[in-house]
Image (cartoon, rainbow, N blue to C red; front, top):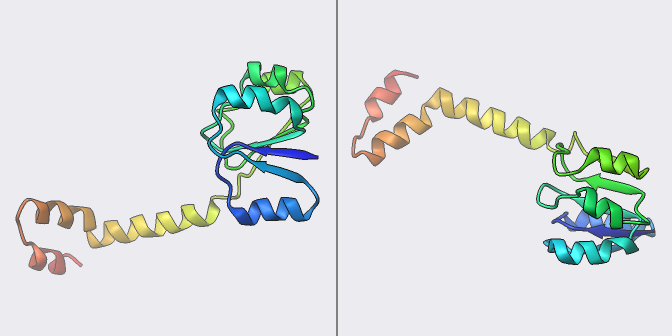
Amino acid sequence: MRILVCDHVDNEGLDLLRSNEFQVDDEAGIAREKLVQKIPEYEIVIVRGRTRIDAEIVKVARKLKIIGRAGVGLDNIDLKAAKDAGIKVVNTPGAPTVSVAELTVGLMLSLLRKISFADREMKEGRWIKNELIASC
């Protein structure tokens, strides 16, 4: 099966697909016009948030069986057009879990230590070290 990758996907993921005998064409950043020309040759397309798979693209994608969204949202894919064409749409909702957890902990630490407040004060020329120490 041929896979067209339209947006950046880590090489580890592409290598995993290749090691399972898929033919992977990495066209990260592909322009819409080129996508419309190339997609009829593929059974699978992988996108992230940049590439829109709309009804026009689904219509010309005669061999397409799967649209894979590397990420959570599906707002860049015309789900009705895909369903009507018998194309399965899948995503990776668990993929950002670690990143979201790390961001959450980082933001909590930032709030606890008043980092954004201290940054703003410093940029305005005020050194408030003692105020920050007293509030911890």
